Image 1 (spheres, helix red, strand yellow):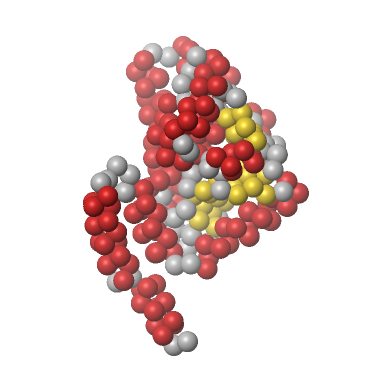
Image 2: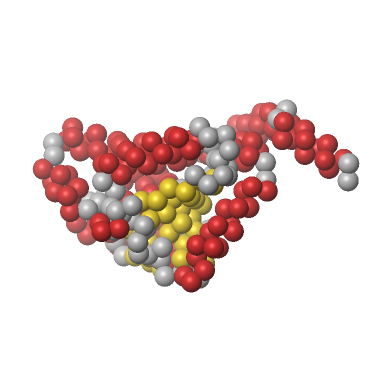
Length: 244
């Protein structure tokens, strides 16, 4: 962790940062630890080497093919818990994607609050090519892009460029390969200039509204608005503004 930014690196470059059981469990541990650090304002997940993450490796696929339904349910549950945890982490979680983000790796990026991509990055859900289903990520993907785009991405198995991913709403920003690291650092540094408590309340409210009726969502907004007014950041911000 570097001050306000917690950097998390998938460190299996020889396996294209495939999401093994150990990697998924360690990601959950690190995310929980970052969430408990009061100084952390943003978490950045990236991959070592040339790729972000290629999804499951050969060992994981072999395990899937030999496991019972109960064992496969437990394995899928673990990945689902990671995706859900990212939304429960109180501060923004950012995926910084170089190279390929495929299958579960693309799911991991999609599960993050913000996706920043290098110009040469590629995104895709190739699971259907081997008779598999990108199942857990659908709940998130459907909220990120249009229904038709989601259908296309998960049924054709093709990968798309970073610019195309940005165009359809899967990616927030695309940066030049040569300056990617510095651009990511500059982008996430912006969270140091805004209220941590306000961002935390905003993230929680935004995702809490999923599935609510319009009136219920408005009422939740009223409740959070009132809570925000009582925070130390808000009181200090108002005082500073009034002194101008």
